Length: 195
Image (cartoon, rainbow, N blue to C red):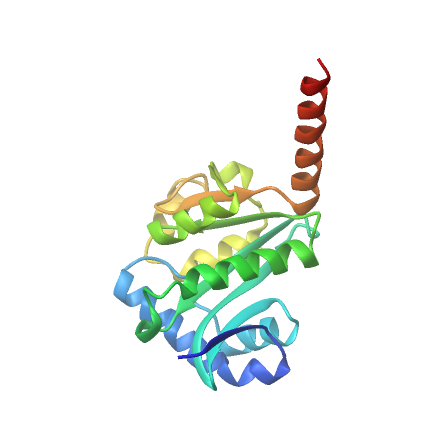
């Protein structure tokens, strides 16, 4: 096994159908929402360089993409999927780390968020600096919430006016906010040392 990770390109668009099949299969097994996407949508994510794809030679292994909301104020890392035969090998973590860095590189002013029911994803997100938040702290862009329509829990979300559901909302600071925080922490440390 020689899994390699790539920023999506036009050449990777050939995997769009298989990615959609894996997302749908995983959603059925878990019984919870993974937003259903059409192959054309996935192709666009790959072609625009807004996705990470993992391959073992020419075999599809895993995937995650970036979505942009509210004029680049927020981005989400969505659709994380690893083919079942490659699970429990740390591949999801590698993909998530790489898509997080890609999002920060391409959209340094954007806060990165996600919603999930997966404990494994919550752990990875926490390692990356995400914090659990209420839904009011996430994007209010209708396009994001439309992605929840294919989830069996969509009625719960809508009954609660998009304020809560079974997923946990998680939010990470933008790259710019993170840099500013680190600079402020360093200044505070230097000030303490001077005293």
